[in-house]
Amino acid sequence: MLLQRRRARAGARARHAGEHTVDWADGRLPVSAGGGLLRKAFPEHWSFLLGEIALYSFVVLLLTGVWLTLFFKPSMTEVVYDGSYEPLLGVSMSEAYRSTVDISFDVRGGLLIRQVHHWAALVFLSAIGVHLLRIFFTGAFRRPREVNWLIGVTLFVLALAEGFAGYSLPDDLLSGTGLRIAQGIMLSIPVVGTYISMFVFGGEYPGEDIVPRLYSVHILLLPALLVALVTLHLILVFYLKHTQWAGRGRTNRNAVGKPMFPQFMTNSTGLFFMVFGVLTVLAAVAQINPIWTYGPYRPDIVSTGSQPDWYVGFLEGSLRLMPPFETAVAGHTVMWNVLVPAVLLPGALFAVLYAYPFFERWVTGDHEEHHLCDRPRDKPVRTGLGVAAIVFYGVLLLAGGNDILAHTFDISLNLLTWIFRITLVLAPPLALVATKRICLALQERDRERLSEGEETGEVYQTLAGGYAEINGPLDPEERHVLRSRREPEPLAPSPKDGEAPHVGRLRATLSGWYYDDRVDVEETEPEDERGGERASALEAAGEPAASDPQAYSGEPER
Image 1: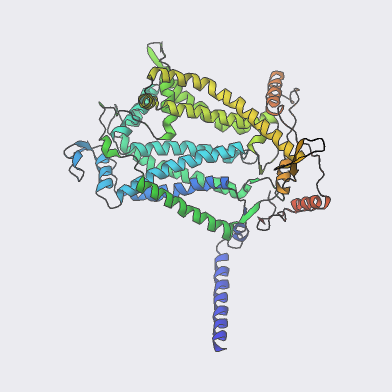
Image 2: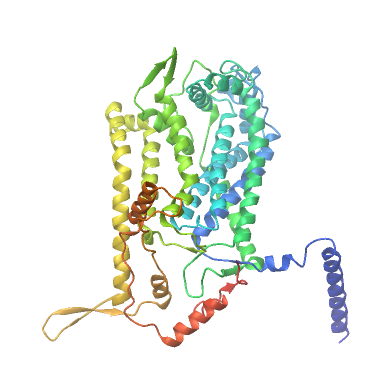
């Protein structure tokens, strides 16, 4: 009895102290206002983890990068190596290369941290790329998320620049070859190319300033921009709410999933440690960027079979596939074989990425807000365009290693180059057409399942002696998803007010291309009246369906 009273008094004191602390903090910080934020619902699906993987890879990059700055010396001053790696004893090299070798062999845990950092960079860029593909194929870039799409594409561009800058810092033979190619790309820009190269390298190539300048950009400018844009990106995700897949109880007016605290935060924290653990295991068992085998950079030596990291491999491939073509204008030579594949092509690719949400909205005339994800099969043209872009990128990536492929498979390098050139022109349109037909076939299959039911694999013999299959009822959740697809009609050819006639005709033609080929859903079996009324009432109230008792629906948003 005495022990219970003591526990009660201790509990009362703890509650009083907690209330006092919350009151004190609430008078100075928006504690009460943050209560609703902690109950914000986050929908569940494995594809939504891609953005979190990118975020946590970036956190690992920051942690390991801070550690590496304590030992790296960003200087191109020439020194003679006298460290513990015997094959390089007596070799002249820059201080940047020397410090990187010392980190790898003379600093406890240095090689592990270096490799964690490098693997995290590759996973970071991969996760951003796949996350952008998920956003594209599900239509999550549409209103009201166009700005967040632009931020995401900008993050990808900055991550590419950050990766290349960090890759070039060790001043080894492989990264130096990449810098030499970058300098050639700068020189290919008409009129200003020479000035750009002189500014970047601080004089004639290779100069003495490129590593210190890259170091400042790599550890200060680009990380600051990345942190700022990631923060803005997350703020917009919170403000606009997360997209979700169609389902009973899920509408454009609510968000159904786990509350931020404690379920989502617990799962997300576990994912962070999983990402950190996987990157550490990769760094421990999979060697990457062994700069000591390449040696220090020398302008008169090129590394045989040199290949960049995957994220700039498409530039390497475009340079190798472009035929030799140049033009002399007023005594100046324009190197089209470098300018087109390394400057104009990447610029065009990213310009298309930036403009696509606005282009699709203009073509389709869709100005509604969208918080439900599209299934890729339901948008065959958009999905086909995405697959065509992936094929285009994949061909360029393979072409970047055409010399390695030719040597490995004993194929003529010239023949292989022509194969890649032809494939680069023909494969993307074929991929677009094939993907569109596959999507339409999947839509037709969905309509059959909706009208005829699910195949059970059971057959019976009819009175006439034939055999027929027994179909079972479709799952109610899946039936709801299939019935929720609604495709708008193509736009009329008449132009809008103030729009030129030829522009209106072009817009109507593109709109017909987007929407003419489709398989409309026809509901042949009425849904149970009570179930339909209840589902409609739940949707109107912003609550999850009863079939998902674990779901949590936040307050109706926007």
